[in-house]
Image 1: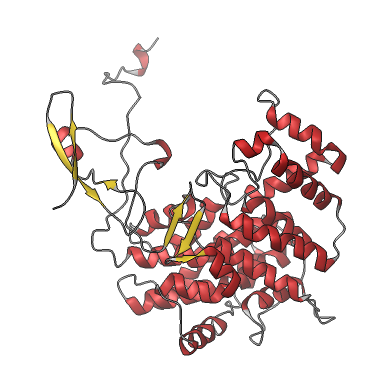
Image 2: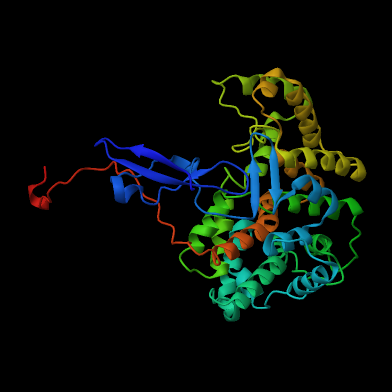
Length: 429
């Protein structure tokens, strides 16, 4: 027998609303009939208590600090897997066999090139355009180049678009960066793995061979795994909302990139670096901690706490270890990194932050690794977009095989003027 809850409105009319149950996690009230039977809507700013879809991709328990992709704990994937295998898992729902992974790797590797006309497209941007602006436009423009993968009703075309996006995103991101600094575009080397190939496209110059420390690609691969998906966040919800209209996959992912660009979402790790610059030196950390405790100071510690996790962000626990390893292996000496390490130490010991569970989150550490790898601050959100692409694609693909999927159409509580009559302009005071 299915469960339900009863709701009684102001007119004493009672309606039974069914409960929707997932594999694990809280139950949800199906309010689909609420307006029809009561004339009422629900009001939930930020959709913090609203489930917009059924999804089998990612599970988060913010109170317990749990993150799982397709049922696999993030800790296990971070330790044993790699980013491309995680991308396969998110898209297909299962970990691949050796043969399946080899085929997937081959598909991605041989779709990494971007059309040569993209060079002309890039030339339309001002030299100092933000790389996120260029990436968003370039991804959206793919629909103009690949007409053979925009029919969303064809499973083969949907999958081809998914492969192209995962494969070409690093190529376009590196091209945007190199254009912004006046360097010639470097095309992908197919004999390299996914992350090493991207770093070569970013930093290699024609005049000399790039020698990368092993830890660089490992750190980047880990960051991409940790960012690969995070349930119904703002950018993923945007991809789903745009996807619900029947828009082509490239437009949907471009919309996700635009949403990610917001400082409250993907731009958080940039904000961490700006905060560290404001603090200045390690000896000013104590003063910054005191200011953060003062509600009237207007100063916030960026990269601490999380909207969903009310415990330690499981991704932060993983990336913290990698951050210290990167700094040690590379022998990096940077005053801002010294400030960050001092701030981390102080916050983890301070009762004010510990009691409020304001632990360093993934954004705090990711910016430090990117900086140690010489990736410029304006590329931080681009890096986030590269990692999140498989998650966006997985949700877009899932949406198109969900039987009860509908076009997104939130309602509102109207607060404007009530009905009033038009007054001719010559009679207005």
